[in-house]
Length: 69
Length: 274
Image (cartoon, rainbow over all chains, first blue to last red; front, side, top):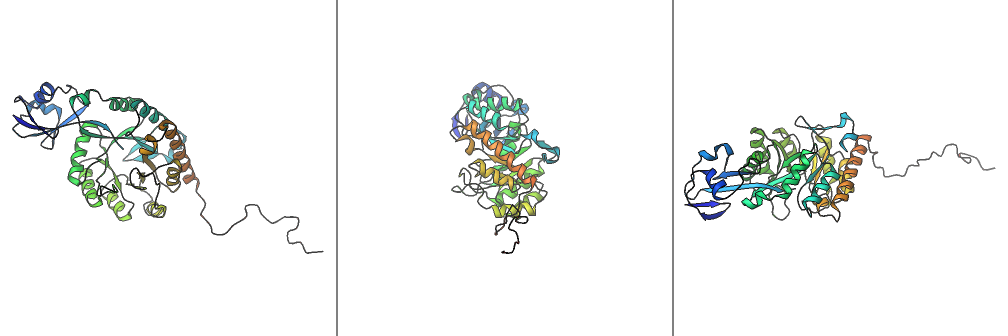
């Protein structure tokens, strides 16, 4: 399926859930507090990742901590 | 620094005691170690951070995040996420909601940039975002202009402080309009006013504090100096000195010279010529 991950159009094997995409396919650590995920510009808290199924052309943003002023 | 002040002059925002009047950004340091050492020298009340898209590798190997978390665990500083990069209320609200989840805090430094060249805030979008975020339970600290009407509006929406810029971000020009800042201070006696952006040297921070700023937030002046640790210490001293001077009461300026040593009692005082 085609997803837009962090702004880039990406072909991925259809994941079972958002959790499957982020942790298994994309290899982000399975830990809370280090990054957050939004789908189509809506925050999805980690406790819901296994409940969220993705569809073609969904926008998936994965954001972490950076320094700032 | 914070412990040297009496409890009556403690800085409290949104019913939370803020441990220091020096707030420091985390960006642009030569290394995580130097950033951590600068935090130790500054002992800031807030440390500002932000959020961006990251790859799995960037999430796993984030030395700056690690050092910031270490500092927070060993100090009384609080995290202040920002909405830097937002150019509309919608974008700022989106970033704020994501930041609250990532950083587990209701504090947000609300930035809505209105002009790419000067980085001045879009106050109309800023007010709209502040209204929505206050309703969502955030403690909104808005980066704003020094316009009295704008600051009054932000405070009326429930913002627990306002943060007018001293000068454009990163310019180091200091308080460009001290007259207007004094107008804000005298008009908004009970408000927490934080000078945010444009401070380049400790004397400029001290001037803002002498004029009644409740705190100073800066980043570049420390991080881009030749020695960020020494500069952080210099700013900490200046901000404390400025606060003490404000509390002590600075004398009004005069146009005429006035002798500080009395003339009365001079051996030739009012003496007629023989």
